[in-house]
Length: 179
Image (cartoon, rainbow, N blue to C red; front, side, top):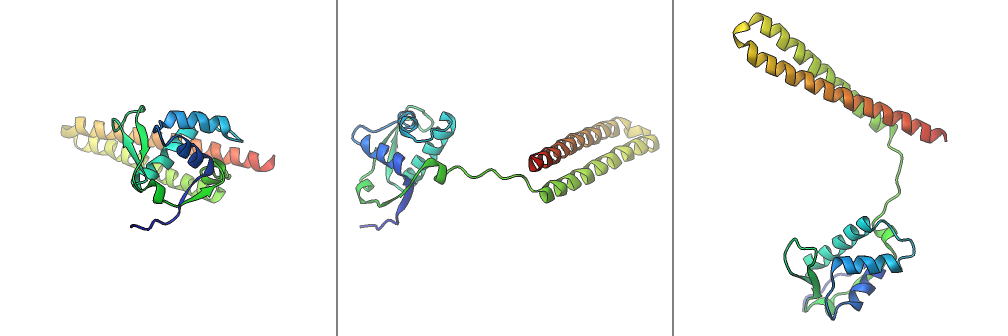
C-alpha cells in the first residue's frame, strides 16, 4: 500500500467534495455551493479558478478522476480507489490558501524598470537615426533600410509608452503612500 503525505486542501472544499462523492460532481456546482457557504464569498470567476486548481492537484495525485471531455466544463469528477486512503490536512479558507496581501510596488523596482526602458528607448532612437544615415549613404537598399527605420521608430514609441506608464505608477504609488 502506497503511503501518502498529508494533502493540504481547503476545509470547506474538502467537505463539499466528500458530500458529492457518491454521484460525482462538476466544478461549477462545487463553486456555487462553495460561494453559498463561504463566510467571505469572493468573485465567482476567481473562486472557480481556485477550486479548479485544487481539483487538478487531487487529479495529479491520483485522488480524483475526471470523467468526460478533457476541456469540457461539464466534466464530472469522481473518487479514485485511493481516495479513502488519502490523508488530508485542512486549510481554513480560500483567503489563507489563495489570496495574498497586495503590497505597494517597490519604488526601487519601479525606478530600475524605468531605467531599463529609458536605455531601450535611447537604443531604439539611435538605431532609427543610424538607419536614416545608412539610407543616405546606401540609396540602393533604401527600401529595406526604411522598413528597419520604421521598426526601430515603433520600438522607441513602445518604450516611450512603457516609460509613461511606469512614471504614472510611481506617481500613484507616491500618492498611496501619502494618504
